[in-house]
Amino acid sequence: MGCIPSKMLIYAAEAADAVNHSDYFGVHAHIDRLDWSRVVGRVKDKLSPMWEGISGWYHGYDGLTPYDGAARFVSDRVVEVNGEQITGDKIVIAAGSRPFIPPIPGLNQVPFITSDEALYLAEQPKSLIVIGGGYIGAELGHYFSALGTEVTVIDMAPEMLMIEDPDVRKRFTEAFKAKPNTNLVLGAAVKSVSGNENGVMVTVEVDGKERTVSGEKLLIATGRRPNTDTLGMDQTGIKCDTIRRIAVNEYMETNVENIWALGDIVDTPPLKHVASMEARIVRHNLWADKRERIAADYNAMPHAVFSSPQVGSVGENEDRLKADGIPYTAVTRGYDSTAWGWALGDEGSFAKLLVSEDRKILGAHIIGPSASILIQEFVTPMRLGLTVDEMKKVIYTHPAASELIENAFLDA
Ligand SMILES: Cc1cc2nc3c(=O)[nH]c(=O)nc-3n(C[C@H](O)[C@H](O)[C@H](O)COP(=O)(O)OP(=O)(O)OC[C@H]3O[C@@H](n4cnc5c(N)ncnc54)[C@H](O)[C@@H]3O)c2cc1C
Image (tube, rainbow, N blue to C red; front, side, top):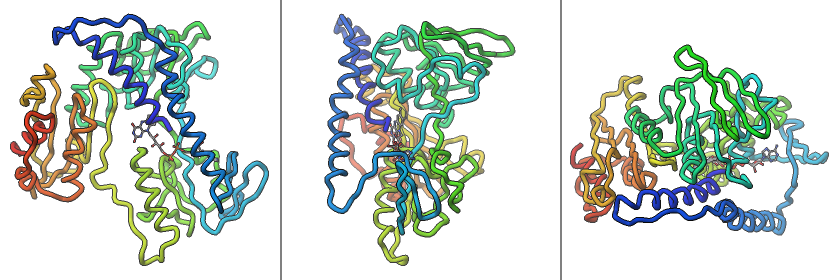
């Protein structure tokens, strides 16, 4: 639910960044005025009719009875919505996740927002404290700071984006810190928060010393939790994992026959394209004979962080390969080794390729402009099981951005 609005907003940040960096190219421009209602309104204008259209489609579809309300299980085969009990031979659970709110002292007395509200703020805050330097903090922190809000990101980890490859998160943290209107407080234990509608204060401990960070608004971006706690799961025999995500087999079926689950609520990567793939699997398996069921395949599942710099990633990273004792070769190629990188005037962006002993792609990581698009050049051969030697035969357009990928393959 958050991916499309957040990317539409971030595009406004990209437009502002382009103006702010145009001097470098000899194009002297500046931002006259920011129309915040247009920045946010554009998202509503586009998405509200779409959502209404989808809802209308459901309500008009022959043979489908939509119930607008929160569902709860009464037993394995029965759910209750708006006081009405509905029985199903087959049930699909796709109830998603919501922001996780950590137990910080004082937080229950302080006004704060999550990504749900941050995407639709009626006014631009002058300053914003973000607790959490994962992908949501990195994306929304970029959005607000590029448009002029003074942003402070606080995280307990020593670097941002801790799930990324070590070289990527190091580069990302340095680059994010160097951005205008941006402050990073890392390695910080949040002790308490206080404040009211006029402003908030966050007390943190860094290297044994306490300090206070203040700002107009507070955004909690400390991850997401599955909505299983709201579904009456204890009335069913459905098994969950230790963090209450529903456990499913490779066919997306829970341990209770003919109860299926998909998306953020299951124990698979919480990404839109993962949910879409799982929906296709469930749609088939729901009605298929057991021998004709198809299994979900998470091999070469990419993800991207739409911040500045942008990150694209697929497969294993160096931390995990080392921890698992898997032999690999790493190849790193800078954007500045391509003509496209020269055109951008880029410094510090790179693609990193991790190759197995049998010459297959174990993982790939890109940080820099268009990383979310470029990573696809690694996803396709990885998913198809091609070797880097086979990929060396591919011809890449000169002088396109994809020559970065060609260079990485040629070096591997
Ligand atoms: C800010 C943000 C940015 C993101 N960016 C990206 C991105 O760039 N790329 C990407 O791949 N993913 C991104 N994601 C993640 C992506 O949005 C999710 O992975 C995806 O929406 C999961 O789909 P889902 O159907 O499982 O859950 P959801 O899309 O959350 O849908 C769940 C639905 O179930 C409803 N529901 C919940 N409980 C009940 C109940 N008891 N009864 C009835 N209905 C219920 C909810 O109201 C909701 O409509 C982002 C998420 C956020 C928050």
